[in-house]
Length: 165
Image (cartoon, rainbow, N blue to C red):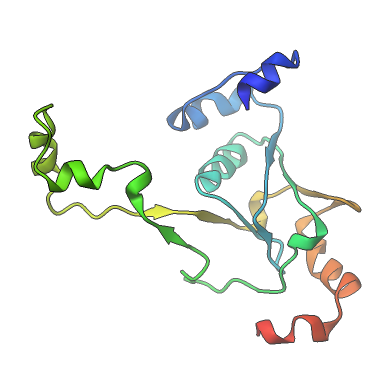
């Protein structure tokens, strides 16, 4: 994406995930995608976005979410709810075949010993509470997180989402 933006003449800087907090003081606005927008105004976003939202909040940088109305979801998150966190196989960053075979003679024998007893988790999404979000920009306009419940009532009939509860 950075290459296509640069090719279009847009100044682009790629930073590492670990440098998010350090660079946030130089940022004017954070734009996030959405997987789903919950009834309380919270957001289900790609993994790692909660850290970005916290860094933006600490530096008073506005967090704007770009979403379509079809991503509104009538579910309210509950305290200590883990069902919003989907986990997938960590095979995207760990080569199980190499680790289970004892290494290929390229120094991975030491890595195998270092991985004993390690539990790997690979979350797909993060939940971002509405307090961290400044604005939702949708295909019909811009709204604050506190107004999302009203959008649900205006655009969807109660019978459409009774099965969610």
